Image 1 (cartoon, rainbow, N blue to C red):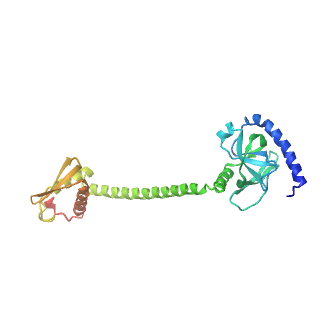
Image 2 (cartoon, rainbow, N blue to C red):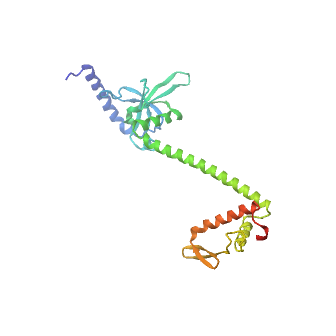
Image 3 (tube, rainbow, N blue to C red):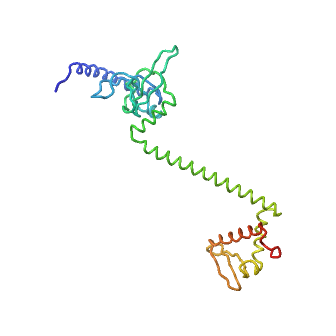
Length: 268
């Protein structure tokens, strides 16, 4: 095993810096930082391909933790170029006189937790659009994207369902408007008066029109709900609540027959 002398010197220098940073950690923990801000950060000497040296980093940790915790979570900003989705390019940031103070890419594959003592000077803030891209890259880097994608798909399905409901509601409104026009055309004041007319008509004899039988409908309430008695030529049968649909069908048939002029006036 060969150990380079240069690397040994770097570790010794970093050890000195670490001792100093550790001495300042207690006072640094009271430092107020915000998510999306960019600071210079002393990453030190890494092992292998870990992030190292002093370089800009963006704060990723949520603000309530930033106020109380002595540590924070950051991602380094470097000039490493890549098409990987975990590398987010940022626009050049300039100072008041136009000098570039920050450029490069946020490496969300190298997220790390650091002491606030490692943070140096404040540089700038990333924009809301850039932080949105950072958040998306975080979900890819930490393999949580599938969960959010499932939520997004569910949200899109709900939107489509709402649009279908709106279309169905508009169709029903058109039917109501058309029905209201028919009520006005045949001098019914409202739907209640039409229903009353149909109820009275159903109680009459329809020997020449409705199956050549005497039909009678009665309503009574029991423990299972409303029941309807249907009698024909002296024979009576009781039907449970779901047979209410049959009554509605009969009403619609009579309405259509009436409006089409096929019900003889002497039967009304």
